[in-house]
Image (cartoon, rainbow, N blue to C red; front, side):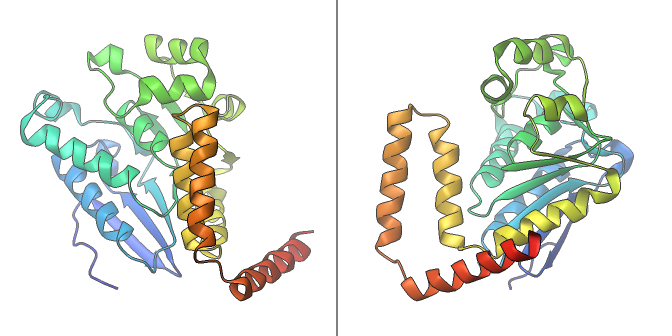
Length: 262
């Protein structure tokens, strides 16, 4: 494996094909200052390029997942152009373009840009201590990571309007009830649950997992007919390299796991 890091505001641990990326500015609620933006982008770029890594977990140190853009640097970081705009674009691109599925392990506050960072992930697991809010309107900043479009598609327009126009916090149970997160767990079970899900992904066919991730993500922005065509195209690519013996071995593992979990 190539060298990952070094970092000052991010921790990266890779074990058994699973990468755990931790935003590590707990004293600032993991607010995204310039250094954290740069290092988080670099972490995703480096981990995403590792073929031995099959799944990625993103979490935050301390009592927050991420409080969004560091308001102490807001004047510079939120400008439309220059280095700050390039920095944010690089981070958004790095997070959204990894072929490996990304699991958000949301341990606490996920606010504004932190909310968007969570929603940039593929699977959202939240502790009961998690809280979500979109305060873009309160701080006078337009969303830039797709929150205005993604949120309504998940929770419906009325709820999205309420979240984004009022800035009101919603708790983890409400987020689960509204379909914002896939798993709601006790705090002590957050990382074990994320690791369990990552392990299931790791044991699957990485090529198929990457194709399924892409089809679901891209299909969500398309019509049903366009999405079905994407799936058919992906299936055709898969059949070009289909290995019956490997497929049979994977089926045997799935059946064994089913018997274990039954």
